[in-house]
Image 1 (tube, rainbow, N blue to C red):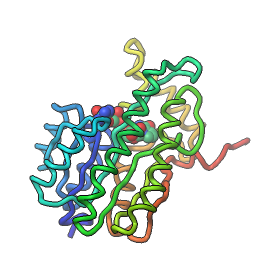
Image 2: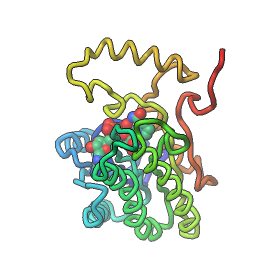
Image 3: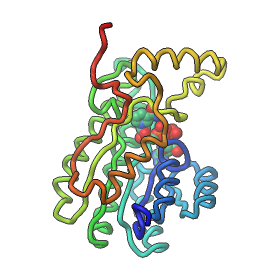
Length: 258
Ligand code: NAD
């Protein structure tokens, strides 16, 4: 028996990173999974490997959500869950952030989440209820210099989560959010920002940083976030809705002065 037997779940941004691990784990737990992303080659390869359906979905485009939900219903006949995982990160001080960049971040992280909730609420209600897991962040609960657009969008994701939980509870749909700290994916890889950087030197310096900043002393793994998303998608969390779940190795607990 899997924890998600007979469930059909869409995972956005599932071609790599945390979404990929969520897709893999949900499939292993018995769900039919719809891998949705803009990285078509990677997404298709993953879907083929795990026996899932791939759909091209830019989460900021409402018409593409309609197509993706129709594809899920066409393939599996029902829809029980969504993980709004797709996201992008951009670095600028607020005063230096171009409006286009701010709007791009909001469109993917915040509008994408809103459109996802809007697109799946009806079909999940028709299936008798289900779950939505939104991916916020540590920066959805506190500030972080140089990522203002991102932090603003992730705070908004928590607002959407709470309102959706209130509005959809009557339809049997639970809505929660995961708030990861720093997780070892492409998004947290500084060598992606500086192609000249020596990856080993960067890794050593980051390991030192995480040892100082994070009480558990290390970066998180995407598989660990996937297990939290599984908890929030399965019946194990049956009496939980409207909540942010921090998964950050203790980073947000406070600062140490010793
Ligand atoms: P990642 O960059 O590896 O994965 C993000 C995925 O989203 C990619 O597959 C990408 O193609 C997809 N994506 C981007 N724009 C999209 C769009 N418009 N439509 C559909 N898909 C799109 O990074 P990740 O760490 O796996 O990120 C997953 C989620 O976790 C994101 O929402 C991110 O903001 C959040 N998060 C990450 C960290 C971290 O440290 N890695 C920390 C907190 C929160």
